Length: 172
Image (cartoon, rainbow, N blue to C red; front, side, top):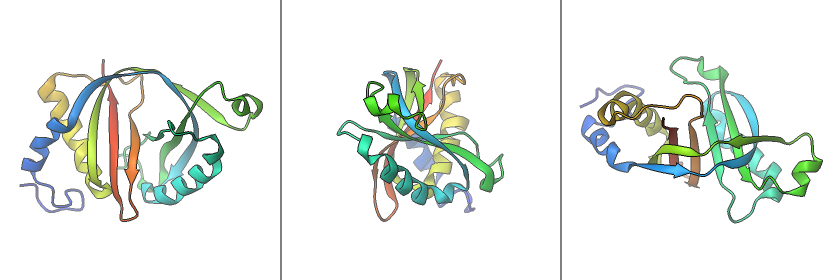
């Protein structure tokens, strides 16, 4: 059993042992996103997401995905100075993107990814990341491809904080 601490949130090692069953290895296609880089505490994410989605909703379609690239680890970086990118997938052919130099675009290289299909509350995400980095990689022999970013694809976010996201780790 993991000791109760600010990081464990009551998650046990037994529960983490099942985490590997929630991971699939997939080949993802390349894609283009509009993005905004943010710096601050991850606790500000809900407000930042509301602003971002409202700002770019005119570019959204039924196929649009919302993603976040976590750049800094809050266990290493001061939690009030963490950088992250909020992203929305777009077609690079959208005319408005070509006419607006203030919209930042980024292309994500496709390839082999491990996708952890998370369903739960955000306070458990720290333990999920620890499980993946500390146990899953060593158990499976997979290696992180540090040339490509780790990103989360938001599938569902409830008013109560419940979320369904795919945490995507690039693999060599």
